[in-house]
Length: 219
Image (tube, rainbow, N blue to C red; front, side, top):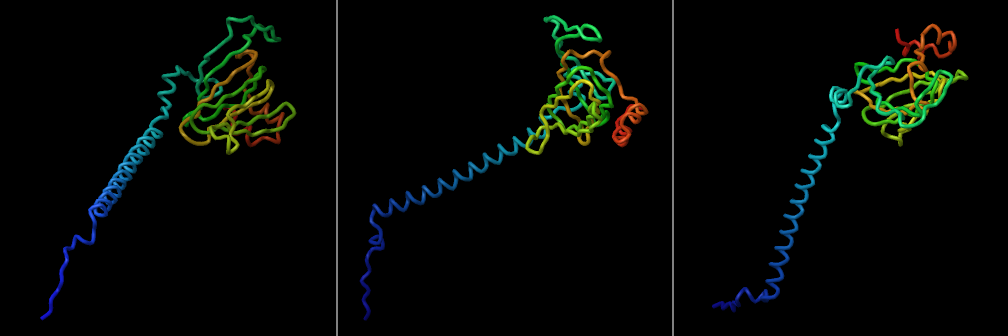
């Protein structure tokens, strides 16, 4: 006859060891739940940020209305936002001018071109929002320069652009719904100081740039 000497199975685990195993199992479970909670929270935050990034850009109509813009003779939309009428004016060959003026300027998909023109005053352009704008500048020496304004300086886009007085300038929104910039003009802007480019005249002066002259002249 076989006789088995059976011992209670709990001899394998002391109370302290058993408690340690329970605590370790609980800790692992709690950590798993915590990770799942964090992942859920992160996913919700990413979704919210994505939705915000999609909807944060205003529409053209919203910009035109909220900034009180009106059509500009060059193309696009504008509104004067500042003139230094609290300071003495400057005497120029064209008459008295403000020391400084500033405007909003908006190009849109429906009005994407700022046609050839030049000003007597220096102009500093400041990029705000939207898509990049390409500027074509014909300097007084006849040299053509192309500059892109946009929000990413790491790709060569300019946040600011200085155009000296006497430089022919055209701008073009190549893609997207709109681009919004500001311009600061010194001495202050006056329509008497602006000349719209006539295609035939510009072609006579700069025949080497005929392609861009024809593309961005106002007809």
